[in-house]
Length: 73
Image 1 (tube, helix red, strand yellow):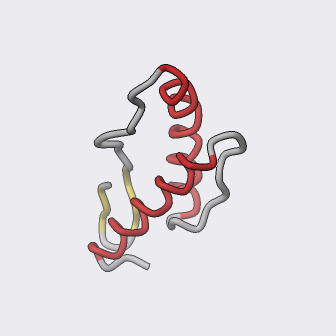
Image 2 (cartoon, helix red, strand yellow):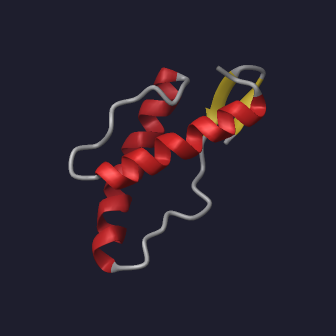
Image 3 (cartoon, helix red, strand yellow):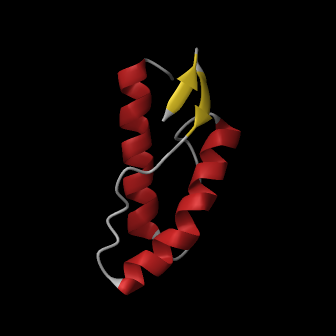
């Protein structure tokens, strides 16, 4: 994640955990939606993606951890 002050400017995925084809397919559709929602919301308080419950939960948890480390609420 990249931030300027308290504004989130970019979110990148280091490892998406897609070790199998099914997970890859889900993540390739869900992650861009989650990134877009996060940038719009400027927080980890976003809706999950239907059909990608585990991906959504992991994404939100990871994003919140990054925000906490940067001191961004």
